[in-house]
Amino acid sequence: RRPPRSTPKPSSAASDVYKRQVLKNKEDETGCTIHYVTEEVDSGPILIQKKCSVLVNDSVETLKKRVQQLEGEAFIEALNFIEKKNYA
Image 1: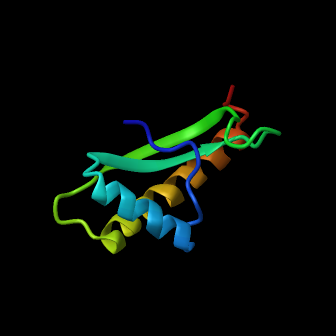
Image 2: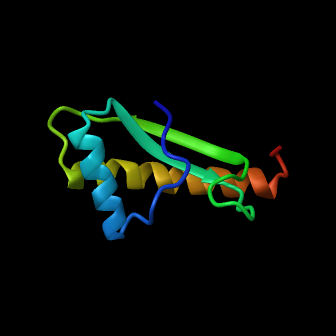
């Protein structure tokens, strides 16, 4: 399953709601997406997508921590792509 096209800010309550839903649905993986902003919400071209496994013993906090790590990596990669003009 692909990560959502839009991931709320990690510190927001919406992020916790999303993580709870992932756990409740017993999803196998989740992740983050960085995309260009366009006039239409969540419709811009994707720059980076990263995913991680959802573990059986995950809590909202452990899952959030892993996704936040991915988000940091994804932002750095996206900035590097943009800086090098290595994007579609």
